Length: 253
Image 1 (cartoon, rainbow, N blue to C red):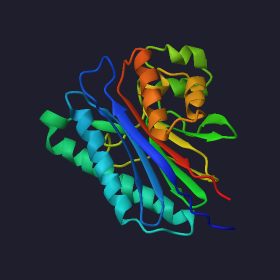
Image 2 (cartoon, rainbow, N blue to C red):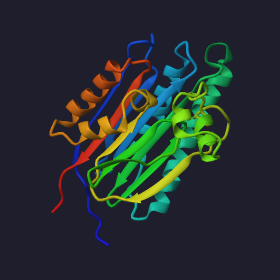
Image 3 (tube, rainbow, N blue to C red):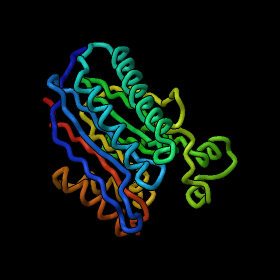
């Protein structure tokens, strides 16, 4: 199988929204010397700037790990990279909170990160930040929310419509920095140049997937698409911080 290298354009942005006093979200896109693409979105949890610190620590730690990463032919080694990088970031946040309990005692962060390595797309996630891709003109969600209400939906206890208005819909079941050890969801897909969108819940709880899809399918520049998405979230109330990392590959022959 040929090992194509995909090059493209990208944008990332966070916004405080119209209600929150602080912005605890982070978003970043990085490209390695080997043309691997790494997208990250984090949504900090903890309040009083603790969530802001946790999400920043997570992004900084993961970017440092990515900068040291070697390119591999097999996905097995990329999975090892994810495990080591997330374990290191988790330990950093957890130990910082433990040693500074009065200031950082309950800080943690959701995380979704995506690696594009030639013909492979690999995604790791904890919590309710999401990864999507646009395949054959359709926006498709790749990750599953690790939330209390999603667990109820999967168990058949409530419907998707009930989940959308459930009083515990913001309760997450997993995050980086909560425990000394980690578990995370991991998936691998064959990559053929699809646009990739990572976002925090401040986007998808405010903006319908139909509207997100319509914006991504426009002829706007990638930074304009990201700006339009955030504008839509704020126009819908902007009740939460919003973070977006977005990538579009150039067409391949």
